[in-house]
Length: 53
Image (cartoon, rainbow, N blue to C red; front, top):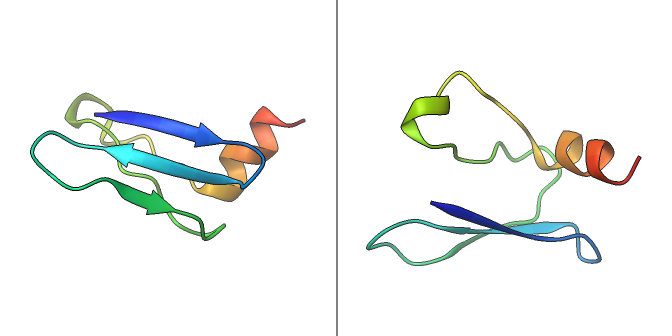
């Protein structure tokens, strides 16, 4: 699993094995996380607030 973060567009491209790439661009969207981090819940809004602060 990988995230490609586009700070200008405030979107995240999510790459999962054997699946099409998904684009998250709604501020209240929760991003998928790997199995070892299932308890970690982050939305686009909180991700960009943290990164761009």
